[in-house]
Length: 364
Image (cartoon, rainbow, N blue to C red; front, side):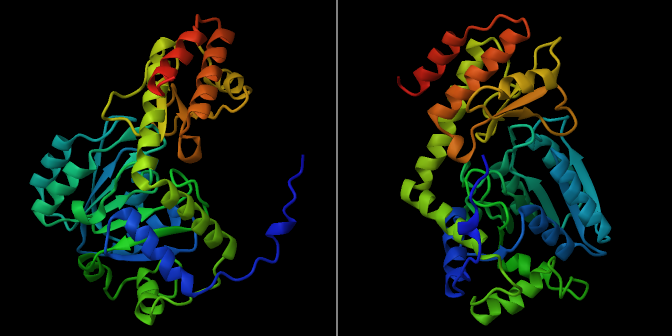
């Protein structure tokens, strides 16, 4: 059935005076008094803008790689002539605090970059501890919090994060075509240099000069109003529910999913507390073709089950409980779909046991 999109046409301009309010609302979610920039593009562009705006000769970066996103960030820094040392976790696993400590002890770094929660593999990196190490060393910290915002506490000011990139399309259940960056005063000093991009979508200095320094009225360029109206609506929902309640809802969906998988004799990929609350990643049993399994699972109503992404994830599948899907109904649909796909593959699967296990988490 074709969706009627006529109501989305000829959208009125988003009021210029509301851009600053949106930035302030995002700052509250991030727990920061730092500047917040609104980026008129999906969060990958915001991440590239950060790397491109910082990178230059003389900058030494410790880049933590736990997924393709970390690899991209290191490549962008290298392209800009920064001296980059990549610290790579075992495939599809979180980085260890000890690995970061060893790297920081070996050299003097200007910046450290890390992804907080990885929706690609369902892992969670130990951000608070790593941020504390970076502070002790005087290293500027850059965090990709695109997936984690709304699912996990980020607490920019408390953790001393200098740059955080967020996107509303995951745990906030908002639009994908807009993102945001929080920037500390210390970070502005390293961003302000004569090789920084200007007159570019990748320029953070342009945002500072043409928006922040001008009183945060109209954004430079031609903003897409639908994205900003949608972001405002997403924040309305989050604020009405309350951020702590949103965090609890995601945590409960994760616990229920893990309990149900255990009842189905299916192994989760990582143990608590190394798992993200965004998706639960499980190991595909031996002898099952992944594509056939995913097709069978996703033929069931309400299921959202996808393949793991990146090196080490070839035999992993993800159960999505991010954003609006962090609910008992969505978890039930996913577990029923996994159980049915296992049975179709010829493996024993006790769907009733799985459903009872998740119900116990929800108090039913």
